[in-house]
Structures are given as C-alpha cells and as structure tokens.
Length: 146
Image 1 (tube, one colour):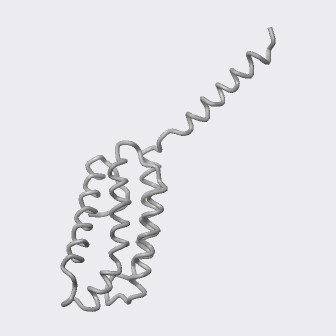
Image 2 (cartoon, rainbow, N blue to C red):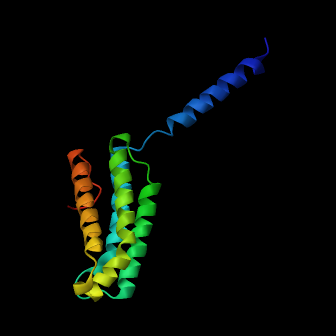
Image 3 (cartoon, rainbow, N blue to C red):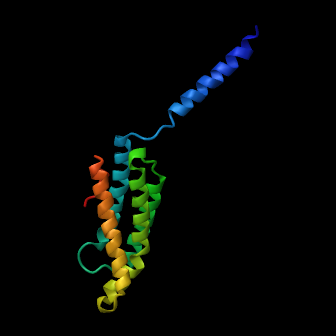
C-alpha cells in the first residue's frame, strides 16, 4: 500500500475542515465590539452638527462620514439572528448620508424646505429608531442609542 495515496487525501480533508471551522459567523460579542467601534468613530466625526449653526462644509463632511459608516457597517459580517437588522441599518445610514444635501437646504432656508425632504429625513429617523429597538430586543448593544 502506498502511504502517499492515503495520507495526502486525509491531510487535505483535515486542512479543509480546519479552514472551514474558522469561517463561521462572528460571535455576538465580536459583532457588538466591531459595530460599536465604527459608531464611536462616527460620533466623533459628527460632533460638528451639534449645537450652533452647522456650515455647508460641516454638513458635507457629515454626509461623507455617514457614507463611510455605511461602508464600514457593510463590511461587517453579522450573526445570522441580526442579519436583517444589519442590512436595514446599512441602508438607513446610506439614506441618511444621501439626505445631507437636503438638510443643508433646510437649514439655509427652513421656510422653503421641501416637505418631501423633511418626510424622508423623518422616515429615516423612524427606521433607525425601529432598528435600534430591534437590536435591543434581541439583546444586542451596538452603541446606537434610541
């Protein structure tokens, strides 16, 4: 009996098994940690919108930050039990990033703000609140407050 004929397939099978074992979904703790870290970085970058009158530059930077946050969230693999919430979160953050131009116009001239733009922002805010509640209901804390 040739040892190479039996040993190589067994080693190849063992190697594949070991590699696949390391490719499972992330733990809840790892997912929470990664998502919270992204959110904390975004919070620092979004501070320019708090208090006072944000400038056009502040709003553009906030939109860029939100777009980056959506990209970073999208790169995270969620546990299967929160996969739908995760996908909704990515979409909602992207929608908010896309609404920053309208927000600039609303701040400049609130009297002439398009009610549809206001409604879009309100709906995105409500979706974010619903997503956050969904995470909390499943026992997840990803660093996003209601």
